[in-house]
Image (cartoon, rainbow, N blue to C red; front, side, top):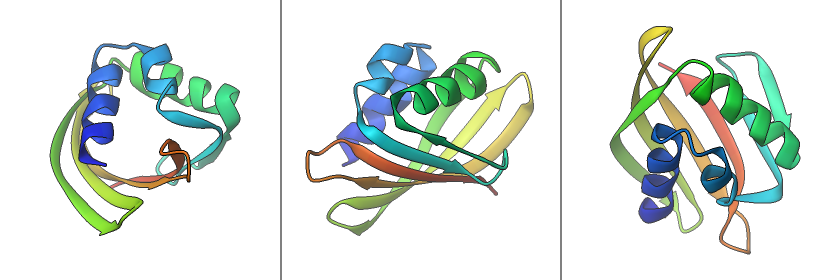
Length: 108
């Protein structure tokens, strides 16, 4: 799980949307409370990545990973970008295929 999260952070820091998308199931859901919206499926996840990572020039630093259970972990991150500086949590759940099935995202 930690390796997958590190790969996600590396892909988003490189603004490589396709590499980041390859880590998600086709029916994945991102629920980001901080932006007040949900993003479903490949098209929704692509929109989220392009808007909030590429569009805001977001650079993420992984601070820690807390394992909740085998297929769920909370990644604590430090974000900087055009919006300034924030910290937050990505609560990530993997599906049976080992890809990201859902992300509950929120800023601290």
